[in-house]
Length: 251
Image (tube, rainbow, N blue to C red):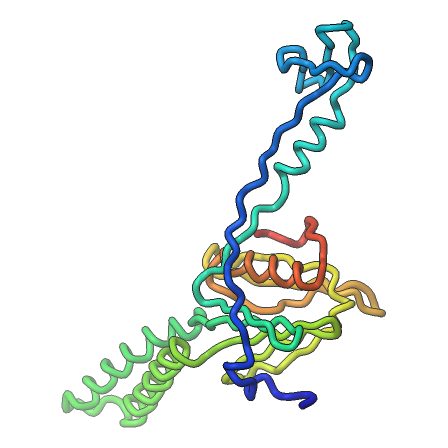
């Protein structure tokens, strides 16, 4: 069925990706003299100046390429393993990513502030002084129940869904909570990078190449660096985007 909504996908039609434990590459290099092809001892190699001297024919030569090749392998970005709160699925060639949402600062503040004021205004109202209107304890109590409900909802139901294929990347939040569903052309995504907010929340950004110029779009917010790095890694891997440094990135 075409254009089948994400929410109607059947669990049996999805297959969770298993984590593959990869051994780190073994990095070493043996150097042979370009003149006599004899193996050169390590004592005759100077890594600082990238020069070598053959102990057999006394030829002096550059080892710059050998040193550079080892540095290239060792500087390969370390793969981030899947953290708790993120699930990957393949569905008919698409990559579906499910992210458990977390409480944001406004929700956390409301969860603390409104129950306190609800108790305070209720106590003052029923203390007999009648110094405040009954609407104060009613409003603060309703606000308290609202934020408590949101906190329970977040821990059980609130999720973000990212669906990626060769044509588009879509992101949806369920329940929406006033967030619009968004869709981007996969071919326009040039890079994925991260920004941090006070060390507790991390933004996942995308660099989009559009007709009017390159633009930076915030994809979503997560509450740990491992989640942010994992999302960056998996989106770039699926879209075959070579990771590179972005000036705007801060994480």
